[in-house]
Image (cartoon, rainbow, N blue to C red; front, side, top):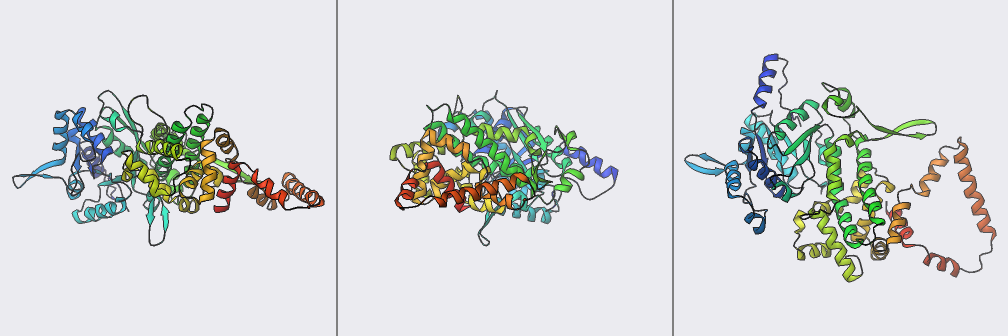
Length: 503
């Protein structure tokens, strides 16, 4: 999919005129849910309403995502401005904008639906661009979950399948976006630096309280968004269940953040467009706002340094802030919906003394608490977690916290019992946090076999052989001792073994 503000031309005058046209360009939001409507309300408060057009999804009202309480607290003047953004006069009648209208009138169209509709909306938008001969309209999304192909039974990050699709994201609370004095930071990411720069400028001008910076790491940003939504559930659980255990909570939150970034850095290495991302830009990424051109991690494998991670995207402040902010309990107002789901999980497990029997029961807990399951992108993403781990070769020790949450909701009954102990007992959880981030023993010995020329690898295997010989030299006069010992294996080790056996 081509996705640029410019046609393929080398004519100086044509390019100059297009840049000037973009200074007066319009932004369109299609499929208006809670997040895009809140952004639009912020724009209406601060005079950016003339730069933004809104097109609700057919059959849905413009402000249908807001509760009656939210609606009653809105300024009628700003609501009227929102309605003007969504309507135009045609044949003497007021009509709501459609996706076709946005493609026809705007230079940047953000497809704001969640993962349920995202790919179909993108397909329709691309068809409309061709039909209307508006190929220079840039398309972006903000879906915070993983996509799923039911025919192949595969899960993936949409921006990897469509690498030129722009991605818009930043930390927000919907109530804060309706506060006239609060501000909001975001990143507009596109693999072309010039497209990212111009798209960020269009979005940045919607409101003085919405600061948008450019970035080129759209695949990583979308992955982080999806993984962050899952991690927010665990963060909400931790805040609620371990509110009195002040020692374990910082460790838990730190790991949730670090592992989101480490996973995305692994995903970044799989990008097929990495050479173009760094080597074929019109100007260095440092000119775009990155502190350095590239941050890569390497690993010594048998004397050869192999690139294993790309952390350059961590310079996108708003993306990292999104992860941190989504895992914090606010002093005022409500946390994110995924965080609330974690709080509900904690209360349910505390009351029943067990993990939910299945995901359907967990969704029922959320619905009963007033959190609609349709808005829980983190839970949608968690359903596809095993496929994501396999697809992107995510190491178990880089995803141990989400793995634990997955086992608590989707695991077998015996695994759930041990997952419950680990998640609810402070000592077990702190031990799990410490031990689960280390590479598994099997991986250490496998790598040692491939590097026998290294003294430390040979020493590791020799020690294992000696230990095995010494163990067999001791008479084994009863099988009951082994059974007794297994019962004494801590819960966190049992869960780690179960996870490593599955993945």
